[in-house]
Length: 121
Image 1 (cartoon, rainbow, N blue to C red):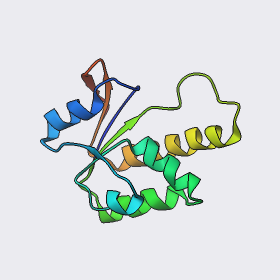
Image 2 (image 1 turned 180 degrees about the horizontal axis):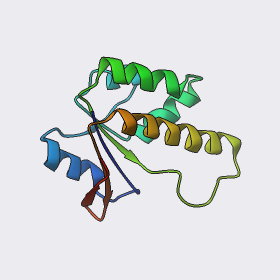
Image 3 (image 1 turned 120 degrees about the vertical axis):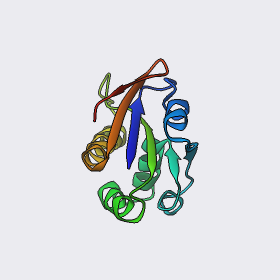
């Protein structure tokens, strides 16, 4: 697995495509992500899972088992002001933990800013 993270609009999907040859695409459902070669908008996928009453942690473990070669692209949503809304805080927290788990399991992790990557792992 390879993980590319960065702030909104920082070019992580294009950077990931250039590095891997796989074009990240948004997945409409968690099931779609389990077989996608490159997943864009992982943070939004986490939000959908929570909105549907699912467990992000269980999905991440399933993703690691069923799609270990995936390229995953996500916005970092844990920086900045802590939201007042409880759901928004939960989404932020669970997405951050999910990204930590993916990073630990990934062979490559990069943070992207202004279209430039910094290799973390």
